[in-house]
Image 1: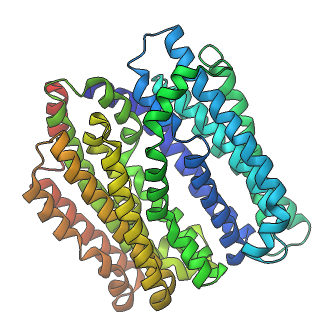
Image 2 (image 1 turned 180 degrees about the horizontal axis):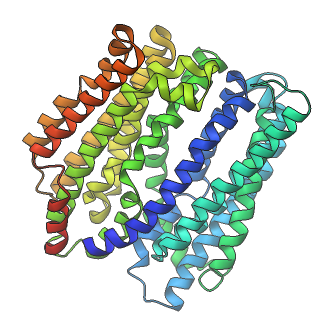
Length: 483
């Protein structure tokens, strides 16, 4: 299983690194095209798309993933996949029509005057992107990592090209930085890229996906998936509702700064470099094998150390990263960056604790996510009035930590992994001072000396992780030999 994980994960890693690299190239473009308040509108509409991707297909892609290996190859799998595909496309088509029609009434009430077209562009983008994600997920369950990576890269490249065209057009017409386009323009570019890539992915899957709904398969998928919908909404609330509270109690500028910090902070999930994408289908296929728990434990320990180092780097070099990738208008996002990087990684590390999905305990999943979401909402309502965007960032970390903690505790009961908890705790404690060191060094030392001290401190934490035995690729190779 681990050999297959590294093989597929390497391909996913290339796609992930390239597509995330393209996303980082997008940030200087978008932040120079849009003023912070326009970016706030863009960010809130894209966030609404995340919620739509959970609710519209009713989590049937997760049911498809769970049942795929239980169906015989051939007609049975085609029937299962075709049912999920047809159900999802019909749902997104209905969503686009309703959201488009509601735009003239809802957009002014949510954002104020002038954002109806942005709302309509977002509706088309959410529908096209949702269909693209359905197709990309199918490539994942079929274990076609190259095609999966091509979809990610093509989408990122398409958006980058269209936004570059927008920037060129704005400069040619005499616009200034932060005033070259509006949120609607940027959303139309995302919609066009999603639609084009979806057409290509559909052609690649023409042998698997057929139109039609099989009543038996749809019932089976909905039985499994419907409890996941409120769980997914709860995860969404725990991860994204801080933006909504910030928008309601703060300003669109606050949301814009928070959104830029969240997107840049999310880049730390690159430490998972494809393993996160490859691991779920492989665990479903091999979880009964004797060596799988130990192999997963060694991987989880190593990637936790990489996560600590990535978040530490974000905390130490927040000011420099924002100056490079976002520009002076977004310098106020620097204090948020480290917190949102931590929240992003905490929200993704659950894949290394697969006990709940293996045991199909969707009720447990719902309870954990609802608890984390409720805590996140309460923290946001308490902290945003006191600390603004920083309060929203702290609430994001709190809810993500509660979610991961509950998920790991439950997962250890259902599918225990032999994790070395003492060493994990020691490395985590060693990394905690990195959060305060960046601003302290910037205030006390000149640029080059501050940078050297930051690198030395990060290297010290890396040495502790290696000395603990957790961050050793050799241990991963041994796990592979045993798996």
